[in-house]
Every structure is written in structure tokens, then in C-alpha cells.
Image (cartoon, rainbow, N blue to C red):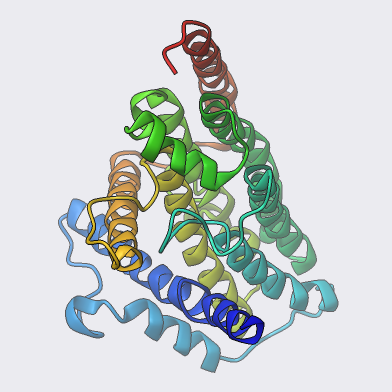
Length: 331
């Protein structure tokens, strides 16, 4: 029996809802984001590769794998080579804690919410190292901008998550989801709407999407921290970014939208939970795509000032509001 359970666990890690599913869904989210963004700008977006262009991200990945992989003469060769792989591994590891086919992730540990926060922070640090190891003037500027933006968005992102932990009195993701399903019987977005908004804005900065794409602004610094990356290394970075989209949208679903829970048929919960997970994450990505189509790129000083002057105070006020609701016995 232990051998069968171990085999099932390995299959979960590799196939569903593990690595292969998350990679495929990451490509789908990239297509969905690009298609929506194009429609909002009265363009068509990906069209020819697969039905409605849905296979375009996969084709781009394969194309990059076949491209020449160049290491600049002035780069730190070891760091330049290892960083893309580490970034991809970190992105995959965070997804093991996201509930997809059940109310808990493949991995569920006491205090795993803090662990997920820490690991997601490592992703930003690896991006900075990637630019530094390139040894290019544009990548160094991109690295500096990445560091400044990192300091700006990580604090409100963490505070928005902490407000959820306080409301549910738990630092375990599965407990947060089950609290919404069994105790509150409502998604936590009803209790902490400000935290949800702050989470979404911080997620845009975490993904380096417009209006927070200053670290890789093509019109200013070519491609920022990733200017020297090509071939397999660039493919791994692109894939890691797609997985990061799955992570931020999946964590939003778990913390604010009741997780993958929804109406289901007894005995088929994993199937229906997966369907609800996909629907809810698509809603989150729709909001993010809409937001990035509404604004132009901010300067890095505007980004830092905006997060510290507005988002952090509002996040603190949300935490105080949660404490008040707990004191009054509302939650």
C-alpha cells in the first residue's frame, strides 16, 4: 500500500495537479492574457498557431529552445547559467502549495503560507541576480529598477496576505480555504476587499506587467535585466513567468475566493474543483489584464512613491479593520 501511495504522490508531482499541468496551464494563461490585452487595444493577438492561437506560447517556448544559447564574454558564466534553472524550479515549487484539485495543495505544512511568501520573494531576488550576472549596462539598470520595485511591492503584498491570515486565525493555506467553505461560507473578499485590491496591484508589479514593467522597459533599456539572455535560458525565464501567473492567480483564489471549492457532484470533487480553479483564476487574470490595459508605464520613482504612500497605509488600515471585526465578534 505504501508503494502505491508513493507512486500516486509522484504522479501528482509530475502530472496532475503538478508540474506538467501547471506548465500547460501557464502557457494557456499567457495566451489568455495576450489575447485579452490585444482585444482591449482593438487588436487580434495570437491567431494562427493552434485554435485561436492557443498554442502560440508553447510554440514560442520550443522556438527559443532551438535558438542559439549565447553567454556574453563579460558575464559570470556559472551564475548566468544557473539562475534561469533556479528561477524555474522556485516557480514550480511554489505551485505545490496551491489548492487545485482539492482544498489543499500537493504539499500542506503548518505555516506554509509564510513559506510560500518567502519563496515568492526568492523569485524577485533571483531576477536581480540574473541581471547582475549578465554584466551588461542595460541589465544593470534593469536590476536596479527590479530592486527598487521589489522593495515597493513586497511589503503591501505581504500585508494583504497577513490580513487574510488574521481573519482566519491561521497560517496554513488549507485552513484558510476550509474556513471560507465551512465556517464563513463566503469568500474572504467580502471581509477584506481592500486587501484583495492591494494584492492584485502588487501582483501586477510582481509579474512586471504594465504599468509596472519598468525593470524591462523595451523603449528605455532594451529588455532590462534579461537583455543578454537567449535560447534555452530565455525560454526558462519565460516559462517561469507563466508559472508565476498561475501562482499569483491561484493564491488569490485560495486566499480571497474560497479556493477551488464550488458546486460539484459527490465522487467527482477533484474534477469539479479543478474546473472551479480554472474559472476563478481566469477571472483574476481577466482583472489583471484589464488593469494593465488601462494605464501607461509608471516611472520607477512613481512606483515606489505610490506603493509606500498609498498601498502600505491602506494595507495597514485593512489589518486594523480585521482586528476590529474580530474584537466585535463578526468573524
